[in-house]
Length: 370
Image 1 (tube, helix red, strand yellow):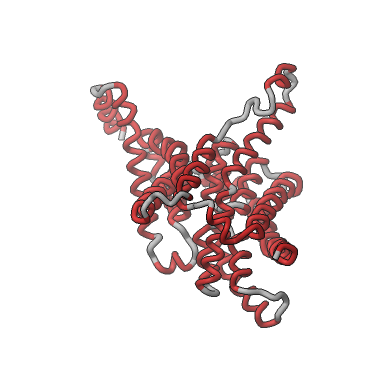
Image 2 (cartoon, one colour):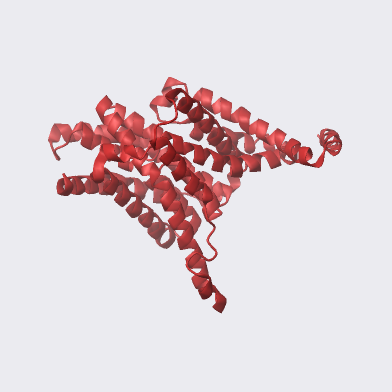
């Protein structure tokens, strides 16, 4: 291995400086690409599709397994490319994610759907921070990531928030794990609850109402599709649209979170000049969130052909899967063990809130506005 590294270094020294930098990324990027392809192939397995395990979730799982077995032996060779994938390919993937959304999506679920999504997001995230920090004594970053994954769009939202929170790899992986566990559980629980409600007639409901409930409360898009399709195609369509509206709230949420964190940091500081710097002083602006909204706005004009959008979506999934693989590769299993069961306990309470509180919000808001 040492001889291989020495040979690799000598080869890089013979290249121009800018090309050396690019060549240094190749081993790690290639490894992430292989894991990404593997995850996307596994994503086609019917059993995995039925259980809502997306390519992103599978990519982080594959990266985690490899990262804690073989990667330490080739860490120095692959580290630059893996870090690049985890940081920069992630931002590009989130930007391209905007091509999956349009502002017209909001019109399909109406003002009712938008308000429900917004209330579910804010209450779930607030509850996560409150319970995570005060009750379970978790690090604020870990509690926030779990709340973000539960309240917005699962693993993609967690990854998007990682640079804003400056979270560690193990914190992100723990949060993603909770999305996998409880999002998968939701695929079976929600249709069962719907069947019980139809039998006992606790609440008057329709396929549209069920789809709105699913889309506003379940973690991942793939899990939303699975839970909605278990009832009817109409329920699945409504669920996906409601979920997409929720995803569109990711960008303003990240911007608001960045401002909040900056103001909280400024409040702790004692420098008098901090007051003169204004509200946005010290804000780590998530510029990719602004571009994400701009891309969604452009996509709303419907100028891009469907075939092109399909290709963009595939490229975007590959980029996000590479970022997830990079995250898994850099996650130490020992750090997750140290986190213990508290993150899962927090996520379980949030899951209960999404079912009970989410159903209450859906019922009340629909009754008031419809």
